Image 1 (tube, rainbow, N blue to C red):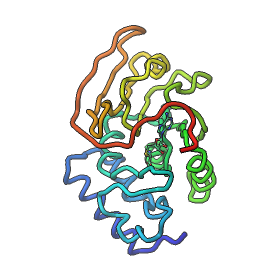
Image 2 (cartoon, rainbow, N blue to C red):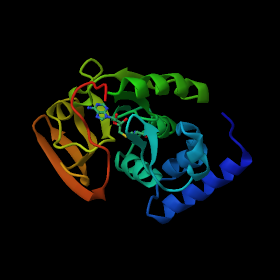
Image 3 (tube, helix red, strand yellow):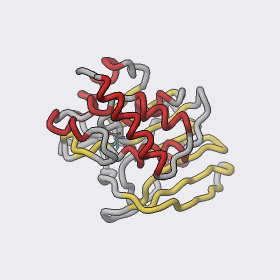
Image 4 (cartoon, rainbow, N blue to C red):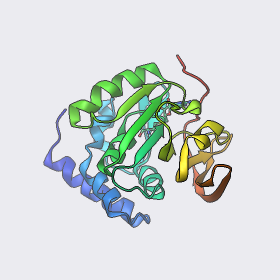
Length: 217
Ligand code: SAH
């Protein structure tokens, strides 16, 4: 687990690439510059590409999202320090680390036991142990810890899960890629009051699918 000056230089360049694609939130860019992304990729053969703006395999058929996508979703959340954020799809924990760098409290759910175990062990080792990680089904959210100021879904959802809307505070934001096929439309949903929401569509992305229930696959 080494982080070198070369890695730091590459991260600075990555933050510039992401900024060049339209991300303006300085805290988000700073998070990308700070977090050693290569350490989140278990197969060291990919480490030399870790600071390219691309997704990579992380095992169990899953991927670490493209940095631009992570930055885009984080920016849409319009985070304020101290807010309570629910993430669906912990995966490598990279997005989790970005959220922690934004100064918020993070609750994150992963349905694949192998990924959950690895990330739970890994995050504290690089200083991101304050995230609360849960092995479970993201469709159900975390009723015990609700309501949340913000919710971010990092897998492609066939529809917007009702439970997540319920667990959002009034005025809260849900950022979720929605679509049945390989491509999804990024949606920013704002909860106006208990039964009313606004929804904005913000481009097409490619995520691995949000799957039902806890899985062994
Ligand atoms: N945020 C992650 C992205 C990982 S890809 C990162 O930065 O690395 C999406 C993740 O969502 C995968 O790990 C997948 O196993 C998980 N996932 C899929 N369906 C889920 C569900 N119903 N509940 C929780 N996690 C789910």
